[in-house]
Structure formats: C-alpha cells, structure tokens
Image (cartoon, rainbow, N blue to C red; front, side, top):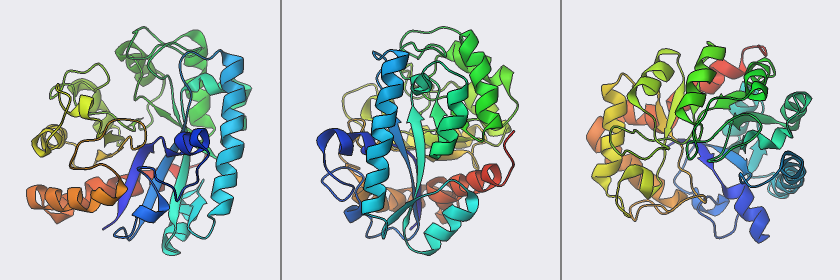
Length: 310
C-alpha cells in the first residue's frame, strides 16, 4: 500500500529525546516495511507559551537538528520542496519528507521571515497552536486573526507555503478564508459533527475546503475521534463517513498526529497503518481507500507545487 501522512510530531520528539529517525517512535524508518510509497509531513512544533523571539530561536535550533537527522539517513529519506522532488524520492523507494511548522510563532512576528522559512524548505505553516500568538488565536481561546496574521496569510501563499487551519479558532478560519481563494488544508482535524471537540472542523468549513480542492487529514488522536478516553474502529469510520457524505471523496486524507497524541489501540504507530488501510478497503472499497491514504494528498501537492508562488 501507499501512504501520504499530513502530520506527525516525530521530528520534535526525536530532537527532544536525542534519538534518530530509526528509533522507538511512532513514525520510524524501521516501521515502513509494508509501505510501497510513503510521504510524511514532519512538523516542528512550538508551544504557545514561547515569546516571538523564543519561538524563532527554537525553530532554528530544531531545523538544524532535523536537517542533521535527514542527512544521517539520506539513503532512506529526503526533504522534498517540489513536486519533482517528491516523485523522484518516491521512485527511489525513499520516504518523501515535507517540512511544516506547527505554530506560526516561529516567524518571530516578522513578515520577512516567511520568505526565510520558505528558503529553509518549509511548505506548510499551522497558523496557531492551541493558544495565542502574533498571528491570532487557537481553538482553545478563540478570536479573530490579528493584523500580523492578516498580512502573513497572503505572504505565505505568495512564497509557496500552505496555510494550515488545524488548531486555528473558528473566527480565525473565517478570516483566513476571506483573505485567500486558494485551496486550504487542515492537516490533522476530525469532524465536529461526529465528536464535538473544539479542535475538530464544522461541516461548513469542511465543505468550503472541499469546494476549493483542499485537504483534510483524519487525526487518529483518541480525544478527537471519540468523546471518551478511547476510540474504536467505528469512531474512525464515522469521521470518514461524514467527510464522504459532505462530498469529500477527493478531500479526505490522513494526518495521523503520530508522536504528538494518544493513539487508539487499533493504530499505535506506522506499522499498524496497513491494517487500517485493509479495514477501510473492506468498508469503502480499494479505489476510495487509495484516495484517502495516498492519492488525494499526492494529487493536491502535485497541483500546488507545480504552480509558481502566488
């Protein structure tokens, strides 16, 4: 099977624990045996408690360490910043790695840093984490985009960076959608109609993402799948069912949140993804399952990366 995962926190965990990409983490180069083609979005995560200056410094520290990890395992993984690079890397049997920032505080509150992080290879920025930053407010606190956020979103698009609305407040999402008509991505968010957590997407936002040709990555975090402390197969299926009911055949993807959240017993790490795929094939058929697990995301990035910035 093929797998394109829109979000993991493995890079941050590896650096914090001083282990490498073949270590005992949920996403590991040693756990991909049954995956033919594999693309992974690695996020550099920054907590909401950091100041702009602190967040910028931490981002640069993580970036340096992550690049060192990629170099160490260059025979198995490569950072991709273009469609051609993704295609070449997958053809070589390597993991096609994409770099994301989870929390726009990494920009240090300066517009010019958007072009700088693009040069670093960043291709996605989650506007906020759960709390407040210089751009706006996360889902835990609520509030509209700030003036810097309203400037930053069009600049991200110009620089070829995808604004990611996962974690952003509903008011912030409304503002972001009014600032750009480009496709929008929610890398790791489930459906609020199924589980009412504030981090999940409402139907209106999902339908707008689908209308624009964007993506929504199903998050495997138990608290987003179910209102309880655990999640079962049916909880996962209900979220995917809802996405498909709303016209998301080409929108639904996976954003596992591996190494960043508690996983359900049926999918503890990357090695369990083939079983999840098999269960989805039984329920949705192979063609639709192939779309959800790989093809929708691969087609989306092919379209976005083949376009000039802006």
